[in-house]
Amino acid sequence: MARWIESWMPGTAASPAGRASGSYPGERLGLPPNGPGSAAGFGRRLAALTVDWLLAYLIAGLFTGADALGSSNLSWIVLGVWFVLTAAPVAAFGITPGMAVLGIRAASLESTVVGVPRALLRTALIALVIPALARDEDGRGWHDRATDTVVVRTRA
Image (tube, rainbow, N blue to C red):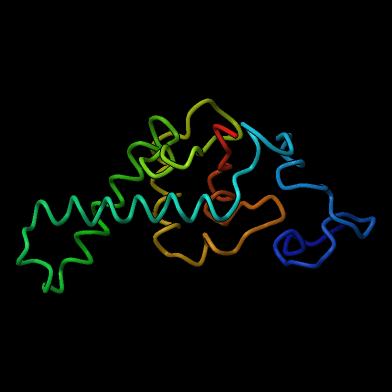
């Protein structure tokens, strides 16, 4: 029996035969190899996160004013805005503004919507950074594995 860590460690066997269980990211999840519905790549995911983070800065700046740029509390305000900007739309629609721009969305593996509890946990784990960087062979981070979600492309 394969140990659970083998699916997380790059270069280790994920199947008893000693080879990876999928020839492309998302194959084990039943996703197509490319096009809409396929697993989103790391670049698109990072770009969507960057768009969301910049939008959070903009919104926080509008609420706090120009004087807050030198404030030590600005980073916490931006984090709070980003958290709401990410968790609420993912819970309801599976998509953030950055994801919409980049043509990707978070999809639940077991239901039609991600839902509030899983969206809150997923967003909290992304905020911790490391869970989002530790990815498996399907491109899913710990935040996706913990919430049974996968980020898929919505357009080619």
